[in-house]
Image 1 (cartoon, rainbow, N blue to C red):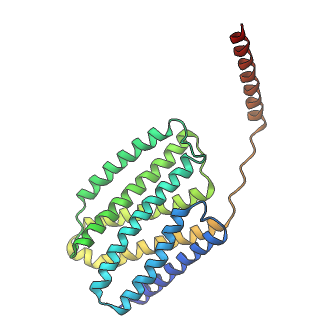
Image 2 (cartoon, helix red, strand yellow):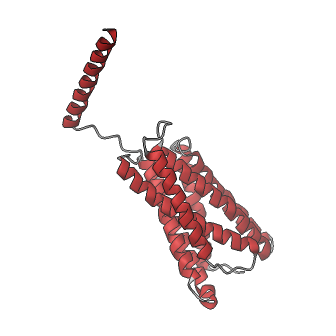
Image 3 (cartoon, rainbow, N blue to C red):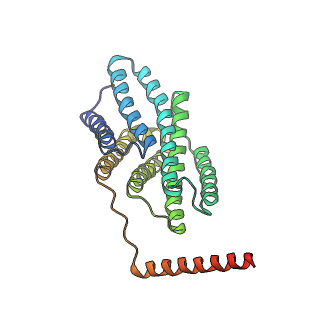
Length: 260
């Protein structure tokens, strides 16, 4: 199989973006805060190098097997990144925010059921069993992540939990990429076999370009320092001070009552 000029450009550009993000994560010391996201980017770098070597030195069938088997590892790491983002948002101090853990678990179960239903309804055409499995798992992962990212944003807003800047940027990038993957896979699912064969390459280019845009976005945003937390308004400071004094007074009355 011969690669077109656009294919070569997108392959090289994506690899450069992966290396750039990995460089930013190490130099700006973001890897300590996001080890799974760093592992995900490192896996992408290693996968790109491995697939490039296999493509030019082995048969097309060997390349296909490598591509689909490595795709499983990619999906697993994406789910671990999702878990990492949720921990940063809802459990920044090591303890889950009150009433959030139950709501998040409920949302996860609901999103999983919906993603499984959508995956069951999907009908990808493929020649290899591993290809069918990875296509379905890729769709399931994309559907689940897009649903969970939307649920996380809604839940954090409802609970009044702030999004730390770098966490929000990672989530926004993966969420956007997941939405595009779900939309393109769904579109392919409702096309005829001839239309799928004709449009599979352009749709693949759309997915790659979307991920390339996410890479540029991550590199720029993760290089910058997170903005300093805003100071509390004076009125809120007064309310907190008044509440603290009231609590101290109530505690003193309770201690006096217990002594008597």
